[in-house]
Image (cartoon, rainbow, N blue to C red; front, top):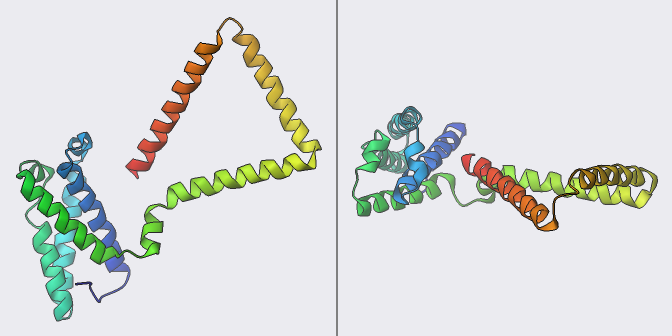
Length: 193
């Protein structure tokens, strides 16, 4: 049942519910990052969910009252990450399924919600595409592009002279390691939020 209430409070509740569902998911999928969840942060979100759902249940209409009471009852027992660690795997899977269902009902499957969660990578891709288009546009004008090419060539020649003793296989290996580290860092930053 989708709540009929709307507003900034419901949006914030939806964001916090999504974060809490992420915590439950970490434990349900036995990810190593589950042990890195800070107890204070978890407890604050869980307490916010229980308190807010209780308030919304008291102040809502009949349909919303039932919905928010169910959300409160779903979040109430899991007061710490240790509680999620000690739950039986089948119960944890059931809890995750119910949390995800509630998350969909709170946040919906609307494009704005999905877009908001994916905004950072999309902004990064947009900036990269804009930079690439700018370089191509500048390249078509000639003079300014030639300055960039000359500067890059001087840097490249300097690096080649500095690494003259290094063979091509080592260069390829180092470039691959550098790219992997950059990709791992970008993935970690994106996953971290």
